[in-house]
Length: 519
Image (cartoon, rainbow, N blue to C red):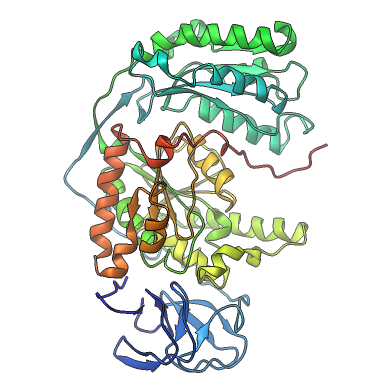
């Protein structure tokens, strides 16, 4: 991956690319010198947008990252702006070459962080008490319960507890019992309930919904994370149904009392030195721009390689946002079977989009396009840079428990809230989120590290960003920024607060994936 030299206005990512990416605005008439070529720019090129380095004939591939990102819709002169007005995302064949390029397992000196070692062997990076709503009909009640703990004056007596938060959503009823949405919702709620960052929880239902609270507890064999595994019978979580309790007010009072009883148990957990192999790092990009795949995403890929080298897990989602680039992962799969699992999910999404009369290339969004992204293939190649260079060890379903050390792909939508909800439900204890246009997402109970792709946005949204990868456009090597991200992951895992945590962000973003009808 190329790095911009200081003062350079564009980046050539691969020697056979026929476009370069503006690392700063380029005026009309500027003579660009990049990759040993001299090109006079025919029109203004905005930050993150592409300029043609050679003439591209109609139907010829447009190449970035050494890969096809689209095809010329009409003749594109040398020095012209290359974007949606002259590029199409026509279908093209990909050679999956399953397991043909399996990289070696990386190694590096062991690192540690201070975390909460749970009875099941997983390690928490935070220590929360959760109020879990099984249905939207109990959402306001659940929020009223957590609101009673907003001022955090209670924390002086329980300094090891990071907070009390509510998990609320829009579903839980008017769906087929046992159907896809019911299964997904309960899997997600179970993943959050038993998350290593959650020490204890109470469950709040209405009483007549499809997703019955007590049945949910029994079917998922739920106990609090704080309970020893051999002590399940006495460690069942407290379940309150509003109809049984006699209304909202009585439910709130009963649940507040229950939380107060849980706080000493949660506070008994303390941070101890833990190996970095216990890191489960989720990777997400949102509000992407043309430099996402040039700066922040490849730097996160370096951090992912370092996590894997420690024996940890790096997990990537957003199936619709690796579309057209999936062949780069299938080649790195540990086996043809793992590679085929990814292709199966790609083919399912093609079917799913067709059923609803949609196209996967409805993505990029308007904001992505304004930032320089032209096609889904370009966006996917940039997004895939977060996956680093290690072998793909597994492909898992939405919200499935993440257990195999190495790089894992989780099947999720591309939309940030349901994607990150699934990744966290799987057990991610740190989330790294790259953004070029600017995003303010967070998701309790997992800390979210925001990485900016460019300096102007980092400066404009300094209160929301944790690290600036735009320094790559100013000459800092990608490897250097990636190591800084890895160091920050360990610091945050050890208790350092992220910008989203300081801003109180992370409850509204809980959003389980809905794939079926609401009846």
